[in-house]
Amino acid sequence: MRFKELEDALEQLVLQIKSANLSNTSSVRTEEFMDLINSSPYLITIHDVEFYRPIGINDAMRLFYGFQKNWLTGMDYLYYLQTIHTSTYHSLLNSLTFFRKDKPSYLNLDYKLLHHSKEFKLVIGTSKTIIRTENGKPKFAITVAKESSEKGRTSKLDLINQLTSREKEIAQLLIDGVSKKEIAGRLFISTSTVQTHSKTIYKKLKINKISELISLGDTFSFQWMNNNQEESDLHKFDPFDFR
Image 1 (cartoon, rainbow, N blue to C red):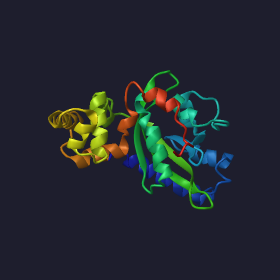
Image 2: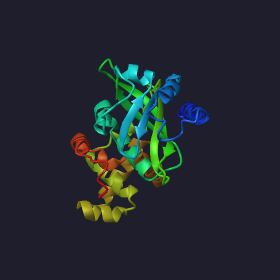
Image 3: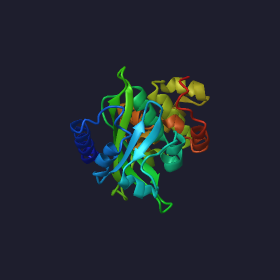
Image 4: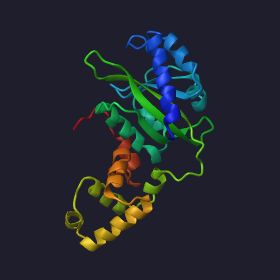
């Protein structure tokens, strides 16, 4: 349970926010709210998920980045692109999808953030909506994070990054429910070649069945992980384009 500690810390923080009568849209940008999240030793970010932008960070997060201020006035979604490593850009898309679909659970993610030392640090974080709009839509969310101590652990992201572009393409089609025969027709290759690619994908990802691949697809978006296109596509990404 890698995220259990962070989930518990987030729930405790939510309880403190409610007890202090700060769980409303007008209280989020107050010094009282900032003082409360500054009492936490974790790396905390407040997000306006309606407009997909950061609102503020606690002292621990501010010192991590080397920023001067807690309140991130005038920031938009480009802030996320500038502080996260390209290899973990998928987490931005997962986050956007999570809050658009208004999922009731926690959003647990691994990513690499730009430390003030100019090195990217491995971080794990859990996020959740804490305040909603008048019509019940997610408005403000909090992420509680910490540096990962699992330096030697091979993450699922590391395994996915071992896939070739063709393997990622086939993996996404399998996740989408396309049969191996249909995949062969679409990609102009033989069914046996698709079968060989599938076996290699399963072996590289250390999985044994399609349900495990689909589960990975819920967390990591294969179509956004093409090594040649990932960075350019995400810099063109508009969170308000619902097409």
